[in-house]
Length: 254
Image (tube, rainbow, N blue to C red; front, top):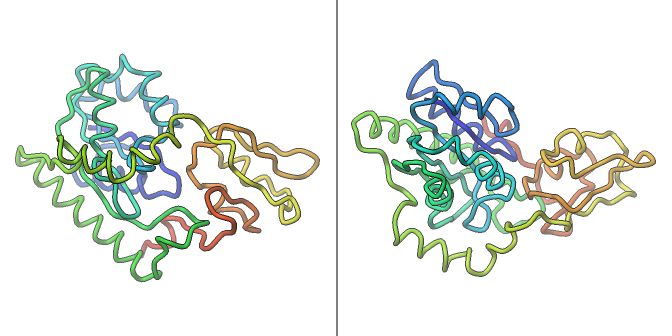
């Protein structure tokens, strides 16, 4: 088994690593940004995918990764973990259907409620202790899911037509278009920007560059929220108008 994940603030990375470690102490999880991920997938007997659901669907960067390497998934058994701030309906099913179209055998799915990563919207913000509780709960849920898989009964959260209907009418029908293309909506307050370059280094798309000592955004944002949650001056926003809380899995670990 190997894990493959895309992660913005660390939730999905943590989930993939925990699942792999619980299943097999020697199993390794790779980011899709790691060139070794595809190489490892070519010989893996099973792949656990983990990703953050966006509007009940798959982030553009992950969808492109799957489609660009579609021959790799053919005949592979895959299990999908979807992390979310509140609700996705069929988060694991959304990626599962894409992988199935590439010839993968989707054996199950798992939904994990974790700390919300959208740093510039107040709606889903929770107290620190509640977020720590969510992470502990997710870890326990992962352990239970691994036990089920080892017993021959992989969990099926997000898989099937009822979940698909929930995801479609819950969010995807109204907001799913937001992830079909990369976004040009990222906003950088140049008055606050100190030109540290952290956002440029963090961006998985190379969408942020430094120009005349200031960060400049392009039109290929995949809405991962890394830059927003790590900017030392809170100078970057996307969906909201100001940063409410900067999030990252490290804040919620023991």
